[in-house]
Image 1 (cartoon, rainbow, N blue to C red):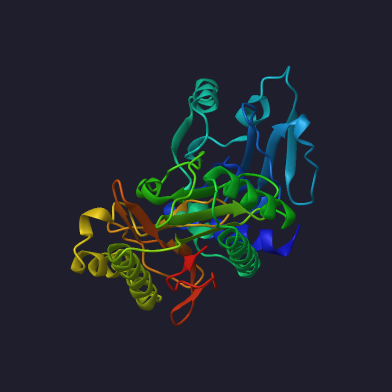
Image 2 (cartoon, rainbow, N blue to C red):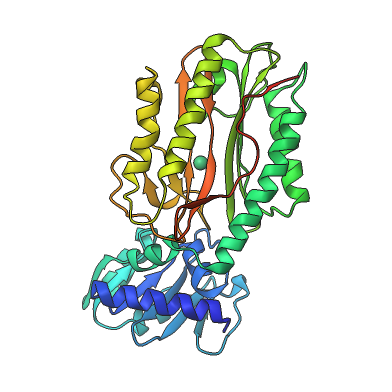
Length: 359
Ligand SMILES: [Mn+2]
């Protein structure tokens, strides 16, 4: 088995021992991939990876998934006519079993009905904690995805002109990502003017107007690790208020990035950004947390919010994305991904944050 997977398994086993868990079922697509290199989106079928602290590894899945046996990892396949839990229910040990937070209850309840000697507990933490600290391969994949995003966002901003339509710019972004190797998923928020005041506005047939803020929030996995960057520009002109909002958000983004280093709780990064926005009088209009962890999933631990108790450690990657949303007027958000380093942070996005008036 590839050395990086073996190292990750060992890290998860250490986390299990610390938490007093001797066996876990890992079932989220991203977490199984992280530990095995096998990417399966099982939909309604059963897919699970069993791990115990003796290092026993068993993969359970439908034979349609094309799973292959690998030295060091047992494989049990079933087909659509079988009871999918047949082997799993036979092989887990009595006692406490850590269950993935994402495992469907139809499987969990069925397992418990077959095995009254099991005590299920939430068992995602050992893997989630390992996934929070990215290893060298993951960091390289995340850097690559963000470099691609820099060039896609540049192309999208370059395409802002008279007659531009939100959904057409979104389609252009999609096309650029396919060319760059993004295989699945989609994620582009393109918001003109007042539409940008909704942080999750979906691109539609809105046509650009002079003076609009244009928010590009661009996120996609390439091919497994996500990028996620937001830039806001203005079309042809910007009011004094729009410029003031923009500079406040930019200052908030930079203020947060300036205090990111190991040993500091993540809530302080949110505080640093929020203070800038509050001082400028826009506190009530920064309506969401500062950011989210990212990796094999677009949103994953650690939470980067005012209530986050996580302490920053080298290898963590999360977004820094303050915004100000003025209903009926405009939205401005500036988002980078950052990697916590030994001494501070590395901003993975290089595209400029200077105020730009385009078109
Ligand atoms: Mn984001």
